[in-house]
Length: 461
Image 1 (cartoon, rainbow, N blue to C red):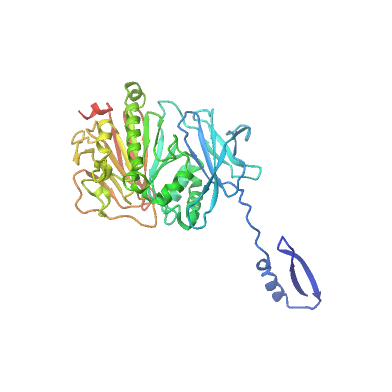
Image 2 (cartoon, rainbow, N blue to C red):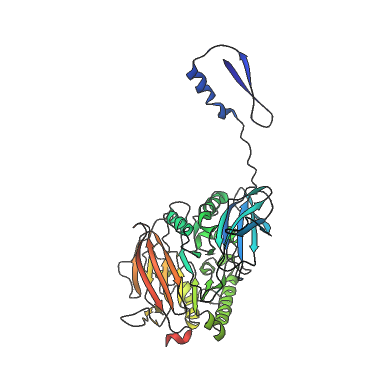
């Protein structure tokens, strides 16, 4: 039977009309019919379906922020309910912000944010987000426990890209197994979120949805977010405070956690004032955290920033130099900008988490380029200076870095394996750290207990 296809005005293939009747071989007819989809006009996407769903902690007890993206303006709703209870019996509304990427195409997207409040600590909720024009998949999360006795479990890393994200599969599975309460991503996302008119950013946010839709995904900016004044980073994430996620702090268990931008020392074209504003904010935040009544409740102070003060990589990065900008500040600008090492030391910061170097490195307690171990036998028991961890080998297209063959005495352990770090704030005196090698199928290749019977500046003496 000879046939031809005619097209309708809107829906592609409209009808199959018989022109004449003539027998043809069956295989020829099947081959011809297999080409039918090629004759169908493409239907334009509707762009109202929620995607790139991720959670963050609002910084207020019993709350959680749900963030997602659509490519047309739609409702911003989250329906949720307790696991095992009536599904979606609660409803929260938020708003959507138009984000126009600065690439050549000026692509538009809507970033939706809804804050859930009144959550029961440690209770598990099932939720989906969207509205009448489309709903996301169902996800679940456990509301953060607001008890001072809570022992939160973290995965933390930096430098995870869209291409060669080697650690991603293991992190996805472990998150969905319930191994973590929080994820800390210490700068450098997607490589890079602005590429291909921000399509790489979209794809990366889809990749991490299988982690970030289940636990709070807490972030800080890195150098790979710098395009268009960090606009993709500032618009896509929803961290506490009013600084577009550039710097903020929050409390969990017995820890006060501070996230900040090291990039203010390097991208002065976006305004030197950011450098000084952040420094003043850090000083005020640390001063508040060190009030006796606050330090008694949250004795651990943990910082996360992208570029380290110290490292033993062989790449001429800022951390390889004695006069590191992050550590000692910038004396080449007016007025001179202070560094962060003295500030963190003087306010008794216990642990400093970094990335940027595509390696893992654990340092002995260090200050002023010198080691201050607690003792020869137990260096991390009552150390006399902050402890630094560098964890930037989660996986990206730039591969791992090389080490300097002659590290300084403060370098305690190094690995070039792809991997990521874990941390548990056990109680007011004990904190546990370990490094996972993805190259070695999830083997823990380094572990350390940090024990402090006294916190604050006086702990150094």
